[in-house]
Image 1 (cartoon, one colour):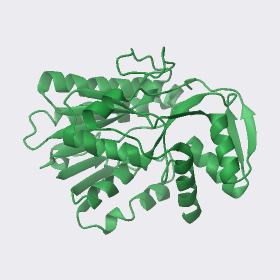
Image 2 (cartoon, one colour):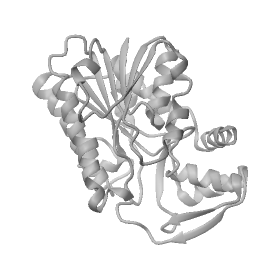
Image 3 (tube, one colour):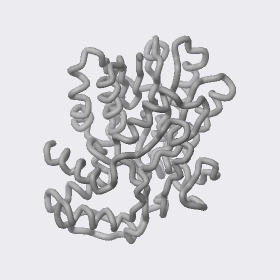
Length: 311
């Protein structure tokens, strides 16, 4: 397949690129290298892919790039590009979220209408669209109630995906990621900060009491689900992807201290936009694309620690 991966230098995007190349696909990646975290980390993410003759990197912004040229002959599109970060989405920085999460998605979809070679566009949505869900595990049928501007923009882009599938037969599938972790995780994300502190003796800041819980999902399971969605997902589908291991942040800290090293913890108040609990009902993803997470929480944490030691 001829594949396009947006946000190709990021955590999920670069791991997906490597998997697609390993499967023999031709991949064009696009990334504008926003300065949300250091460019060097993203360059390292793509180091292996750049050695592959079937990979092409375009450094450009989806707001301005020639999308007709970008999508030429594309069969699978994986739309991973987004402005990340729940806490940073408040205030004056919101424009970056509306531009990079909503406007670029609409622009991409416009060019998918009547695209002659397109077989599937897979969108990276987020569990943040649920906010403080009314029930757990949470199914896709529950009304989304995001509690952060970030979640609002991810939901808006997801609605665009479904709208273009309904009105223009664009073959889109949206995947709601639940707290992804593993090698290449962004340096601002909790597991990265926690593991780094355990390895180096540094201090971490913990927002809230630590009893907030998440359905943690390992990166390889997310990537496998993306490829499965491209292969057999139904146009217009919206699917939860959770790892099946719900744990509190305090549970995670205990695992890290028990298997990696002690932590110095600075506890502070909860920040706005932080949902109390998440837990995915993945019944639909299992039925539609055969989703079956394989990497459990502790095993995944150890793999992330191994990656950080080698970095």
